[in-house]
Length: 129
Image 1 (cartoon, rainbow, N blue to C red):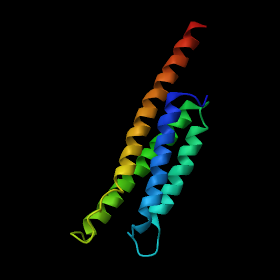
Image 2 (spheres, one colour):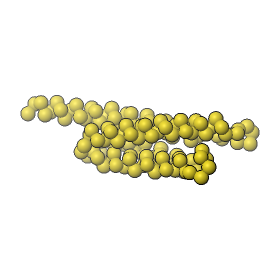
Image 3 (cartoon, helix red, strand yellow):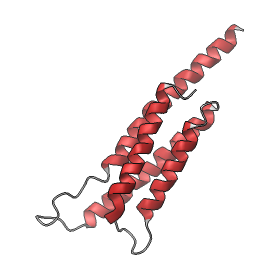
């Protein structure tokens, strides 16, 4: 069922990955390899796959955990980029990019809580049969 509450949280995590893709165009960690863009595309694909695996809750939790891991790696990579970035008066708006993976992690953790709650509800109903 796509109208569950965890669907909204997973969708918000996918939106955070899309926003990171949009704002992370100027991030250059390795000279010619678009690490952030590739990670964002993978996050969107895993998130959409998780959205449409609503019948298999264990796989949905697994996909969300993979997404959380990729987002945690992205936070580390973006923190490394921020520490090596020259700042000051010329570049005052540095630092918005790591916020999006952090938002995605929080949304995915909340989605996992609701998925586990649904799993417990289904198991309790199966015991009554």
